[in-house]
Length: 222
Image (tube, rainbow, N blue to C red; front, side, top):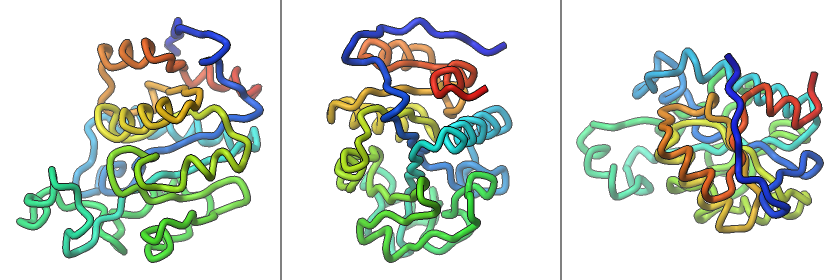
């Protein structure tokens, strides 16, 4: 059943459908495909919901930013909390140029591979006129990236977040969006490893939780 959420909605937290963008977080083969190096346990439930959310934003003509991680073979850009394991051959994933680093195939509107040099240089990769890829060097999508300026240049004041994983990069991205005064929505059914305490904490920060059905209603998609 499509769960409905009761949120703390105020004039400052209410999402604006006309100025809303979607952020997909780390939906890459190594984490988002059963054949990946470190697949998440709930992909059979989450990936179809992510695709439905993405399709809804496409139909609404709203911007989509696919946020990705890319690790260099020499581990020089890997987070300190993972670098030692990565260097030892453990926790290796999303290595630059590998199949595992690519967007999950069903998510990619063109099949175009990631432009690793451009992304690592801090540039947005345009897939279509409304769909882009952006590299993030750490957990949050706003840390050390052009995302805030990119969204503001497009007149965006609201973002909806989906992806992998809820307690790590999804949460860090939500906090970054909130810290930068964006109105924030999240679709729990389109995130891996969700926990109820974490959802309540997000709601206390003004995040608008939505089911897939509520998202479609919000965007005016039948």
